[in-house]
Length: 303
Image (tube, rainbow, N blue to C red; front, top):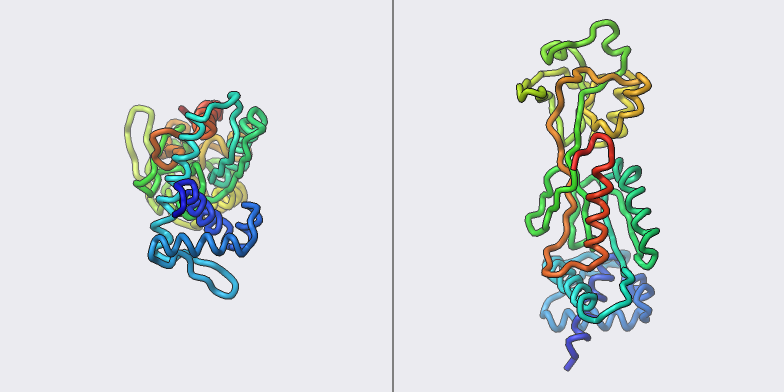
């Protein structure tokens, strides 16, 4: 009968196969032969009494049983990593792998700088930094931390708030010419560039005193990409709700204008989501603290 460590090894091999989508690629990562990795997968399937991965000529896909098992497998693996780190003793060096999924715009600018700074301070941490604006299946992609702007649509995860994003309605000067709006009702004739899924045809703004206004605007374009919305607004196609951190330079140089400086769209919360565990690996704890501290220094994001 296999020892407990062997069972964990089977789960680690299964998780790596799921990550890589290939038995041969997973085997290379783990220093195994393809035959050994295949045998470990078959042994795990025999133990579970179910097919976990469906094999086709060109790809692999998790079965429903494999999807269920993968979530628990990742939790067990993460728990073992934290347990070993806590009890095995070390020289204080933070090491190990961290895989993070971050939103595209923030993840390739300010958050990337924070992450790279973290890795430089902890060179024994192998950091994988992935960018994706779409909802992810956390267990399937095998990440340690998902940085999500807005609500986290997975109640199996712990969601730690990192900051609140200030958002404003901006447009190119040529769009308004000499008819600068003074009240929300003055915006109704302007075309709108909507950023899905956060905005629709009605723009809701709040004044500093708490007064709220819903403004119907003519929807000219909808996009799920903030860069596309930003470029459309700069070209004069319409006004767009944008985060202040993203357009700070444009506002300063005058290529975009804040249409109603006393009014703001609803703030969005930046969350760091991760699997619940009694003990988190030290490298993840440190990364979360680094992100929380660093994000508070970004103009337009409040801690």
